[in-house]
Length: 289
Image (cartoon, rainbow, N blue to C red; front, side, top):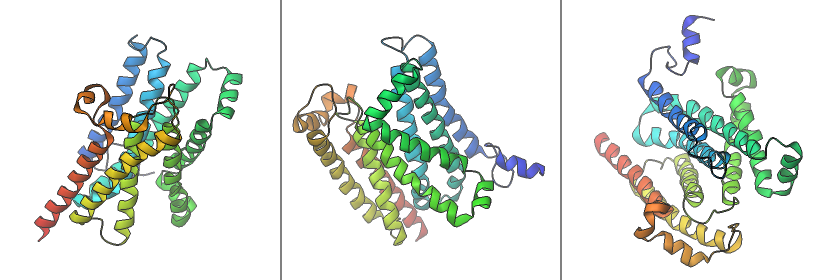
């Protein structure tokens, strides 16, 4: 293999074998959560009741964050007209799988690596069935993420397999929603962002993915659906240790007094992120005219 071909495989170099500041910065940013997780797990800060519990939670969050970030690369690339963003999509996807493996390790560790306990829990909890489906799919996607896999499988077969990303993502997000304590915040934010990304793909197929007006309409609609999702989910499927009242819980989370410890409510985060996408599209459109 030629030196240039080897350099193309390294995360610090672009497809032409040249050093890439974008990929290098991305690699550093992707490693920071791992360092934070390692510090929390080994420093004693997470010792009560078990360091595995926060490791499970935070590694799962970073798995979902990075997966959605990978799915957001295509919209960002087209809205910003920044083609180089495509170079970091694979890096983000592989990093998401790394945090998924950490998530699995932490879940096994919390059960003291007891095979009987793991099997009983794995077979009895629907949320873990979904997690297993997601794990198998993402394992296959990660293994086939290299260019050589595309060549061996053929472009159409490779694309057909990687469309399962959406199925695996949905399974993973429902797994999160079914987790105990999914009452407000992030469990409802992530499906809202995923919905925005999926509807954007529908718009893009119709060459409307960079329309500032349609992006704004999409953002407002997604924000409303995010609120409704929380209400409907808490009404029908909530798995909180103690049942909560959907309406009061949802609107309690919208109060600024709660943001210090609950974080911004999902509806506001969706509006902010979607609004920024619409503004960027308007700015780029203005520059092109």
